[in-house]
Length: 382
Image (spheres, rainbow, N blue to C red):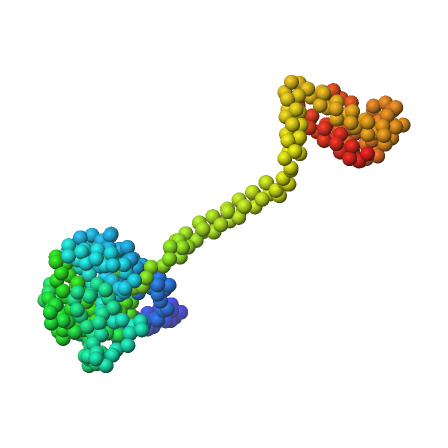
């Protein structure tokens, strides 16, 4: 009976588990839940970071640049440049270099931006604004302020067999010039204007944020970027808007540890120089300086001719003469007793006093200097 009950219990549990598995597979669905995350510091610093990685995953070689300044000289003849904003801070020499690069076969993708610094429309203005992008001056494009056109926009690139739908915000309706007509546009002719220039292309967009992080996820914006970037087989250069940082800011951002180490080393070097050289010595008068130089020269000449005994004996005579004036009764003492009493009274090592007053003169410069210094110290204490 016990075995039958155990097998029945196992069968019931197995049936319940099998029933739950079948119900899960038939009636339950997998749901994707999106979790919002704050953007990274890199994406906040570079609005085109997602666009660059998107093109790189599609097989294009991409280059991210912090500014348009200095890029013209590094572009290849079959590259694509995505510079959504350019202003008058770009030197005229670089503007000409970029336009020559387009003439040679480059593809420039940029946007229309109006002048905002101190510009006030006059009553004679017909509701149009001129571009603040210096690279578009020859195209004579203008923006219509009172345009009612809104996205999404339908765009069909020449190499594509169907239309793309793009959407963005902060867009401007573009008005091409009647004298400089675009080679192809969007369906409405007011958001994307493409001009053939020499062997290259200039593609003008009505929004500078079409390929930013969030806009790239909308509609067919990423597909449009891909179609424009592969017009040329070369690299795709994506340039952030704005002027370049100062050289010291770029240096600090690139090598902060090296700069801190260099500053610490300079401080240590200055401290070492101050400790090594110390305060400046007083400048002696010309007569006194001549006398000191004469004394040093005489002593050097005597030392070189084995006159160390003569030099030390002169110091000993001066010390004994002072001792005879101060304590005449001690001059009659034996040398050992004299050095013992002097060491006890003036708190000086007896061995050093004995070497300075009694022992034979040595040729070692250190021992000679020590004996002279001991005699000078003793004279100062007498």
